[in-house]
Length: 228
Image (cartoon, rainbow, N blue to C red; front, side, top):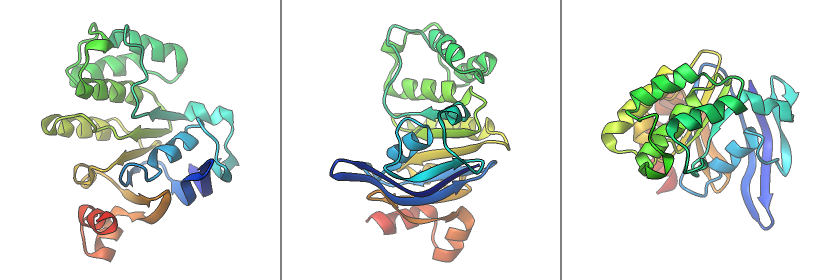
C-alpha cells in the first residue's frame, strides 16, 4: 500500500528523519515507537503529504506520491488544530465538508462511545476530552491509511482501554493504521508490527511476534533496552 524508500528530511542543520525505509500493508496495526524528537511526527507528516522529503521517495500502490494521495490518508496530529468556538458537532460538519469519505453517523456513534456531548464547545474540553474528539473525527473517515500521532496523550489510564478498543474496533482489512507513542505497554497487545525510531533513524523493525521471539523480550522490554 505505502512504501517509503530511504527517506531523509532536513530542516537546515537538523536531520529529523534519516534514511528511513519501511512498508505499510493493509489490515495491520503498526506501532511507531520512540521518545520525543525521534522523527515519528515528521515521518507521519511526509506520508500525509503535509511536508516533502528532502531525499528519498514515498510510493502509494507502487506509484510516486502525489497530492491526490492525501485523500487516502487520515492524519491525527498531536497539536490542537480545531477552532475553539466550535462545538463537537460543528467539528463533524467541518470534517464532512472537507472529506468525501467522512461518515457522520460513525462520528456521532464514536462521540457517544467516548462520552462526549455533541453540543459541548471545544474551548471547554480537557486535554483528555480533546484527544478523544480528535480520535473520533479521524476514525470517522474511510481512509486507507490512518495515522494517529500520540493518540493516548492526556488520557487517563481507565479511558485508555476504551480508546484502544475503539481504535481496534473501527479498522477495516483494507486499511493500515500507524500509532505513534512512547506508551508501549498500552500498544503491546494490539499491534502487528513495531518500528523503533531513534534520532530520526529506524533502529529496529519487524512483526511484533517475531521480534518477541528473536529478542526473547516483550516489546516494552525491547523499548527499555534501546532507549535506556
